[in-house]
Length: 61
Image: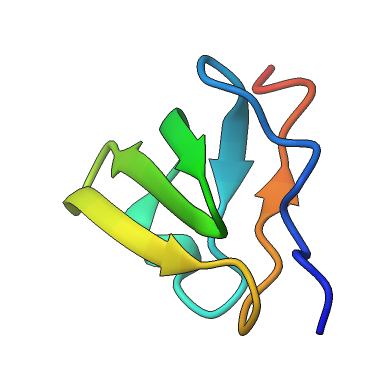
């Protein structure tokens, strides 16, 4: 099984593909397949990288 978010680092911006209403989130940590993201409209969420691939956001403009 692959870590789908292995390249994400703290500070990167991401979107949750199943919950776009949460807005843009900022990666807080990425440890052993668990990514903690602070979403603008949802708060902190821990994502299992072996089940879900987050979508990097490169331009919020």
